[in-house]
Image 1 (cartoon, rainbow over the protein chains, first blue to last red):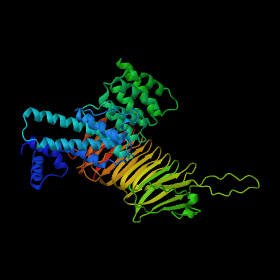
Image 2 (cartoon, each protein chain N blue to C red):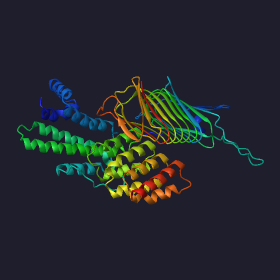
Image 3 (cartoon, rainbow over the protein chains, first blue to last red):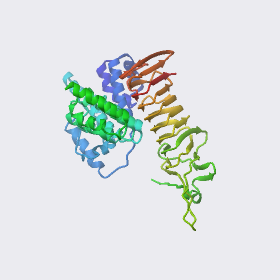
Length: 267
Length: 250
């Protein structure tokens, strides 16, 4: 069984909709092909995360949001709709994620049933499918960051590692977690996840601002280390303020003084 | 959603909970309920210690020891007619909230069915959990966190004290995380097949014990996959600055 055939069947394989013979053939191929196994694991994670999402109660805006997702899909926008209000814009994510998943499964089914396909068309479809999976992962991430359970929020942060480049809304959600999450471990994980967003000056400034707002010295230390790693001169005032604050934790103050010294030494 | 709020003052009249108060402390029984959500016990004891242990029963039993506040004398010629309480217990949709208010420095002992998730928070006291299966969150500023025979997932933070965790079973799909600014973190995991480990340490570093072999100390940031990088398995993260991290694979 060749890889392309297997990848066409992955969605149905994960949804346990294949006949026994086909299922066994796919399983045998996955056992012997590392690339397809990785692809299946990747897709399986998103499937699994969707299963863990709570079934939200219907709300009045649900239909409008579903239509927004549908419209975006039809327009072929891999990034999906971002028309919600800026504040807590990802509140509709669980329902949208389910809607998007149904659309993707429909697309997969239709794609598989199409008899004649050219090589270029397949490549394009695979790229489109990957774009949809990326968008789905993004929706699941935004939804999980709002879960009550710290472990679920950590899982949401973890999904951002698998994104090629988290978009603005995901980065905002991570910043929100750094600033506001009630759990220190989730905040630390969000700081880690923002490490690859150092090219964005707004992110660097927001993390510098977060230093003096934190009540956890360990998160303060993580922020200082990251900004020093980025050699971010914008962080100077925040580090100075923390180093001079007699009310602050002594370890965090010392780390801020150390960071300030490093930044001044590198400029 | 049916809301059931039970305050201590109304317990006896409602008959929903059984409450007793003796010289040693208070005892409140929250009856079992088949809720839409798994059972969660959410505890806040700002100055007290928290001990949670599993038992074979179905109810949640909340007991205090020594949680007494200093009584202000009644004004001359008057008598206080209510009973001052530091402990408040309420239940909503299978989430049981337990609050031990300051200035009570007492000990809170909670007995729960094995399948129970916990969210535990205190400032000064230690947190101890035994034999629970579920999602456990524990947070203490100055108290040690000791979790023994726990299954499921753990997310724990103690700013200034040690964290010691022994797990019987973990959910490989759910991440766990342990952090302490000044304390050591000592975690024993049941197997090395499911663990994708990530850490950030200070000078004292991290030690790994697996299958009779040990490695370490490793310092700074790092990642390791003792059983191979199993895609789909969640990460277990460890953060400390001034403590030592010990990870032991059974």
